[in-house]
Length: 326
Image (cartoon, rainbow, N blue to C red):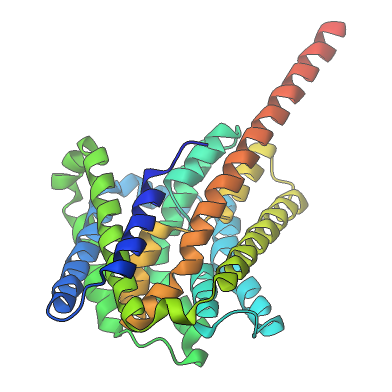
């Protein structure tokens, strides 16, 4: 496993916020910088998505319905069940983070990459991941409102969601014929820009949390419990997506796409959404479960994708051997 520069950047942002948090006159500066970067990120997401990808992601509904159900139905139900069974396991903000994680859309790049490595249905993964991200911009805020309203922690103005997420995305789609080609030619630059934006948002969020006494309120043991809860959630979803695919009689390639697209949660969209939906003083703790889940899912799914690839290669080799014997 190669070192992930983005993970290093996240750790550095958290460390910097811990030893040198922004305060005083710098707070509104970082607030408006975060707002602008979030809007720019969603604008470029709209500009990068071709109309065909958006349409394909919405009309190929049979396979995608299962993936979307896992992403936006199965996950929230599991999160609510876990909270109902073990309400005292984690701090309230950390439980909010777990529930918020469960409402997020899937990733795009890693879902497609792992499906490809494992020998799954890559076109289906492309469409499903695209559909999840496009629909997630609309579905996630609604889900978060339904799931978390009982906690009284959802204080974000609904208009913020419209102005910072939806309108920039729609504007990107409208201008896609003019800026889409440039966005595709500069994918690497925009990827760095997206990650840089997330690092700024994380720094600002953790600065607020540190000023509120984050590290005095969060024992190290709680971090271990969050990692354990994330791992258990991922393992359960991987098992359930496999079982559901087999119950429905999906081909092996489609099953692989369901496993990898249905178990992922996006950090790239999750952190900006949290910044819009939750009070600034709570965002730092709330995004911790998502940041841990992001790294756990990458490691576990990388190992799983390699295993599935080896199993398929062995099955093909055995089939060829049987054919030669016949």
